[in-house]
Image 1 (cartoon, helix red, strand yellow):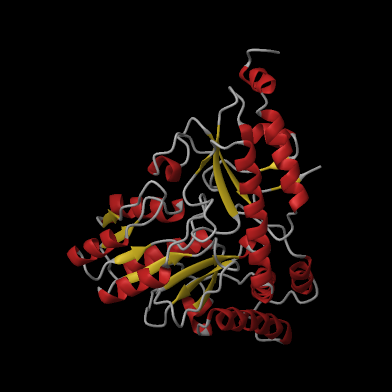
Image 2 (cartoon, rainbow, N blue to C red; image 1 turned 90 degrees about the vertical axis):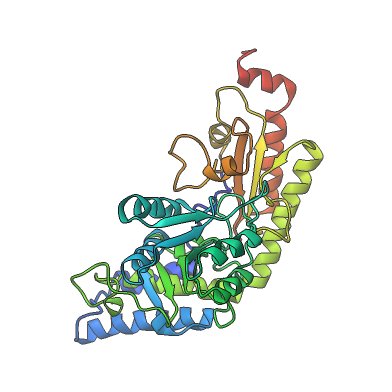
Length: 387
């Protein structure tokens, strides 16, 4: 039996998405920049996808720019704001994705920008009072705060954050990778200037994403050599990927309420079963609070099993989970998110993340395996006291 509980890293491609993409991987292979019929057909597919995404988000098509994924989109927003908008003060949190934190660290070292970190508490909650304090001292700053945390699942109130930013005439960027396709986003009501999405987080293809740029913002291109994406992002468009992105997002929105309820059911069931068996477990962040976190993510600290990583032991048993962000799993020093929360990094901190394809039976199997692993005689085996 193989069970995939690492959907925050990437999700399986929906069969309907693959079906929509196939014509553009074969017969309809034209370059969207070509003026003949093959090119026009490809261009129509790209623009239709752009319109679909804009409609779902209550945005305008000219505000949607296709990229290779969310990391590029985050970098484009940050770099564009430095080079075009001339921002020199940035406010973010220490819990952001590395594509934000490491980019800002690079620009801090090489472009003399200033970076202020908004306070977070032991549960990973952003202190909005401190955000206001920072903006009072530095109005008209660039604020980057994610919607849903990719490791612990905590949710930020981006409507309130956007409102605060508007009061101080700050530009607001939000990494919505983990929430897009899982929560409804109405950009006519959320005062946000930049927003990012990545198709493979909601059953679309890898290697395609987008950056939303509010029409009030005008960026100069950072890549040159082509007029694609209104010259903001040069290079031949990934037509099949773009079609897959819009199809996946459409399907996610069609079934969003039912999917959210189902994910909440899976998550609640896992939490309940584990608390029954391991009453002293550590739940990281607000991941065990359904009203404060994503329904798809639970992050838990388990006792260590000697020199063997729990992720590896579960992998051998056909259960695939993560010890943190997939983008930084191979980096030493552990999770920067859990370290900021003051968590014990000697625990086996595991992220379980669900999709619509997971089942209650899979949760039962996971709980059974974990229960067996932590029986006294098995703990002795793994720590090497007994063979």
